[in-house]
Length: 394
Image 1 (cartoon, rainbow, N blue to C red):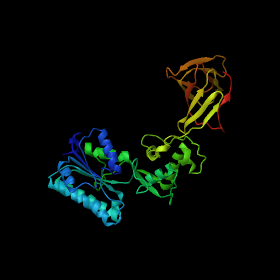
Image 2: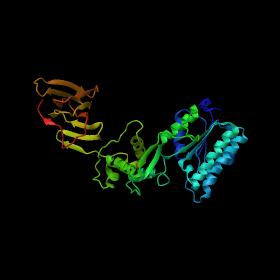
Image 3: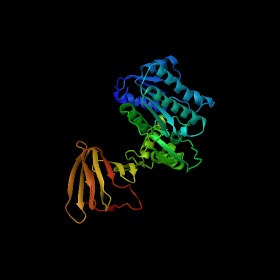
């Protein structure tokens, strides 16, 4: 059966389904509506594997060994299991496509790499003998949610330890790491399953894309920056005062930092999902910064008591957006060389963004009976050395 002929009801065999890649793949297939997933684990019987091989319309072979007590287990857990599975498929007369995940270490002269290379060669030979489509994905270091820390992933270990206020070791900060993100891995597997497509090199090895390259030092610094942004115990363990910097990483689509940030958050202790903000309170209400980024400015929350007027200042270059989400208010403007006052009524009953242009002195007054809550965005994070804020009554 060609990959394109798969339906959401086709039986799909996934070995190693409970592992890091397997859990992410299974979760994705379930959300896409696949209903017949045959999940094989190391404790399942040979008879179960034989039945799954007989029924399978597509095989995703993820099972393997990477941290055995004895090097011989590399060969039984990687090459040996692969040979067994392929024999069962051939005995059943199956031409189901077979996809296997391997490692870039297959090009190296160590027991793990050699066992992975043997498994790759067995898959290719199976394809030649049976005519079944085969996909051999040779992967760089994979990172993402649900990867086991303190095992064989430096990203998982760094994220787990930093999030829990534990030390990390950076033996060679300049050491370069090629990494691939779990969602990209799953996307490449799905392309092979559903479209029969894969990016192949000159040896017909399939490659995950994109690949992100980062040094060990950069990796540690970035993850520690995530902890400092949230503050609290994890930040204090890094020698800070524990107050959040509120920094938001580069969240451009496909960026390494976006993927790493999502990964880091998945390792937070369950009692550390929340973090405190530094509220600046006085008899007028409060002002609290929420997020800061050098590229997209700053978001804050302003709470004003009834009758309170805040603002009465203007900016040269800084501009803002005000969004009242609770209460009633009036935003007033005056161009600094004019006497004309412009008013905008705002209310949490009708969400409306009001731009605060440069060169206009402005204020906001709570004209309701209760507190007024305003979400404020500024195009730059506040810099006390260059505040670009000048007092002037509207």
